[in-house]
Length: 282
Length: 298
Image (tube, rainbow over all chains, first blue to last red; front, top):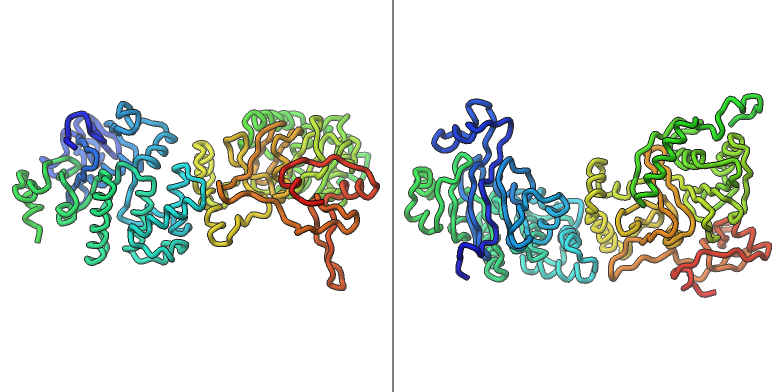
């Protein structure tokens, strides 16, 4: 599919999140130029500002940057976990991309989250309810998607757990008794349960040991190829970005400093910070 | 309990002062206007502790008039301690006629049962509710449950039912099975047995619920759709007495109590005392009709 100007899946305009009181100067006086995201006048913190990008169907976009650069904030804003200060976002499958999803009612937002998006958090406790069994967690997403047939729910959960290589025998166990990698795979099963066109992955492999990391990455790549889900992958780890993504955005101090094809950024980084990032890669 | 009639006139009619009654009635009107929605109310002091039937008592005393005929049951029985004491209290504070006869009463207050005999358009059914929040078992914070109700976000409740089915092979809720009212709010029907749940659906009477300790009122207006939560393949069912019949009347289509005797033997008796009396005297009270009771063989 060619990425023409109007077949985008997600379009983000001027997305900004500022904690505390802010003035017009808050955005002018922060950013990579000043190597700070704290406004010198008001002391407010500019978590991210002026974020503009488009995501095309089936594409995988990476957001890379050091910790505190605002990369997680961007996906959390888009998944409605936080409320934006400024900016808008448009999602093609929702009202043909004509309505700003960030300004919708809570009920509509919940509908969008359940039908059009999935999210995998760094910490499985954010994405899973540890009081429910792993099957119950997947059921929650399916029920929110309007599925009220226990037999069908269990069949679908079985399929998903098989696909993510979680032993199906443990479907009715609580995720608290699982290893970190298994919890992460249950979280992925839950996120893709309703076949959403868009998936957010926020530092999914951080904190897992290397062999499990490799398995989880393999799984994500397989899912992407099989199901054609568009993804936004947030990571500080360039090898994850290289393995998964087509295009990459580099963030620093809450701003986008460079964007381009992943290979291009890794081979020939232009911005000083990207160069530092790539040269730090072992 | 006021023993001495000398002091009885010191109390307002029906104990509660008129302005507080007005407040409760206004809240009841709101509750009727939004079926299943929990309306906060003042829950004024009563001569019994909150949580011992004060919610039901507030509702009864706020709506009762001099011509009303009052009946009160506790788990189906007119004669249990809770019912007797509250009956005496209401009677001495209002002077209204009281009765055991379900069809004669205009206001019926209840704890944990609906009468077997069918209710009519002229009756108001008042429930004493211990826990008005059906979502409390899955969400402990009140601000969150209110938001969940506001957005009709009931997935957690459904997952809790799913989990029960998965771990026990059935939905393990004996009393207080959650219902959906008028296709919108999920409501706690107070701890009535499953047997009574279908009788709320399209009932001719007005059902008012008062939770005194939790300070909430809610209502089901007459002829309102009330459905128990059920999955497409896991259906709601009522208690199964496995063909047992009442040992006094031989009747099978009523909610039965299992009686234990000193010699270790057991048998069943109809739980609703007035219904049992009527059957014993060869009267034929009209019973609630629903598809679950109809399936029981004579």
